[in-house]
Amino acid sequence: MLGARDLSRDLGDFPTPPPLVAAVLERLGPIGEQWPRVLEPTCGRGHFLQGLIDGTSPPREIRGIEIQASHYEAAQAIARNAHPMDVEVVRANLFDLDLRRDLTWREQGPLLVVGNPPWVTNAELGALGSANLPQKSNVKQVRGIDARTGASNFDIAEAIWLKLLKELAGEEATIALLCKTSVARGVLQFAERTDLPITEATIVRLDAKAWFRAAVDACLFRVRLGVGTGAGLGRVPVFAGFPSVRPESALGFVEGRLIADLDRYRPLAFADGQCPLTWRQGLKHDAATVMELEAEPGLGSFRNKLGESLDIEPEWVYPLLKGADLVRGPALRPTRSVIVTQRRVGDDTRGLEQAAPRLWAYLEGHTAIFARRKSSIYRGQAPFAMFGLGPYSFAPYKVAVSGLGKAPRFHAVGSVDGRPIMFDDTCYFLPCRSPEQAAITAALLNDPDTLALIDALIFRESKRPITKSLLTRLDLVALSGHVDCQALLVRAEDELTRLLADESIFRENRR
Image (cartoon, rainbow, N blue to C red; front, side, top):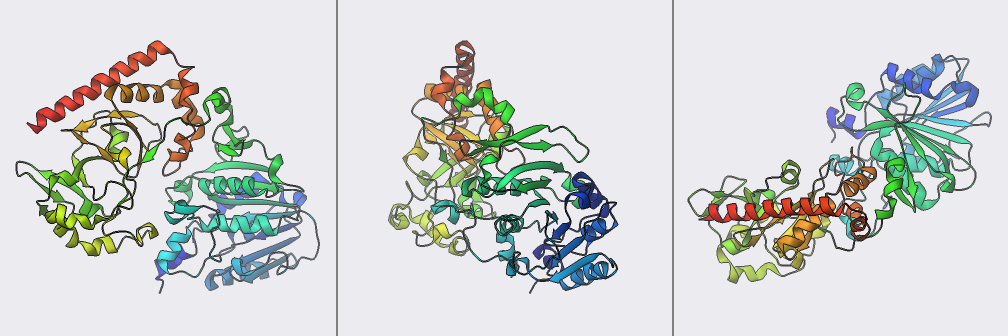
């Protein structure tokens, strides 16, 4: 049963302040001169309805949809007081309606869809036990393990957007909704893949912290539907705020891939291709309290995050760096370790019972924690299975980057006392055979042109700006032919000196 606070989350209850409503409508206006009909698909208590009614150029017809009883009553009161204007509010779950059939309009003509749909994901609603969900489906058409590990998670606002685009595709419609900027990007990418008929789009950034006390990057996302397909969608201007009349940048598609800043990207497009090396992601175990350890000084044993001391076979314990460590850099001296139960994904871990009886007993004592791992990837796997493992994990040298960094820095990393450093799953890395290979690779990746290309591609407001799919686009061969060789060698020498110094420090500390 949902409590009051959870109910607010369940319904994405971020009431739009009237001053923000006024700013949105002013940005879109004059409303009535452009659109005789307006629909608000999740109208809440009716702040947008009231703003439309009170505007200097109101539409002739307004329709609102609201699921929550108390909100519906408030919006219905606004509709009744709007007489003689034609304003109707329907109490319904938007996902149960067919917008082409279930809404009645007195006249035809251009349609505006405006409002502020819920800012909550389907995963969050599932955790709350909510029924306020669209019909279950792989909305983003994600394949394989990506769908199983969360890439198919979507905001309810995204599902609302896709419903509106599909059901209003035959209309002369403009859709302008407040939403997370990540939702706007997701909608554009889906429209590009499926040829939804978006002919024009703009993004106006919104200070969600000031308006809603929400620590997310948000915007007013506006699209216009037209006859044909989305092939005509080129530049998508991005404005810094509602008063802005000139865009600060423009995003758009190049060969089907979304680019964050088209103007900065174009001179570097030669290096947007295919990386000749294979990027790997760090370890995924979802049991940090048990699997991640700290050494107990002078005792030759470890302590886990539960505060428990343990004495296990050390050959199954490896030094660990996490994404936050790589962001802080450049001094990369692991203070944590991680238990590694397999050499590659799919290995049978039951051999640990004989090979490492103390470790097996320790893991067996915490089976309840492993049983609580929610990801479906662990189903049918051996006990205490991990992911992100292979021969590459045990390479003596690596070049690594944090997926969390908004200004990426690539690090050459060695081993600690002959044991390769592992990374958590917020990191990506290239395995290397020698310190020289790691140093020159890091130097090339830290070249100004490489970093400028990444900067043009990444969306900084994302939770994980650097992704494996982005890294695989870095054509290191093309970049190597464009780099300042002297500067590259200087960076490589510096990286190699630091790397060898770190390994020396590790050895000294071990003694």
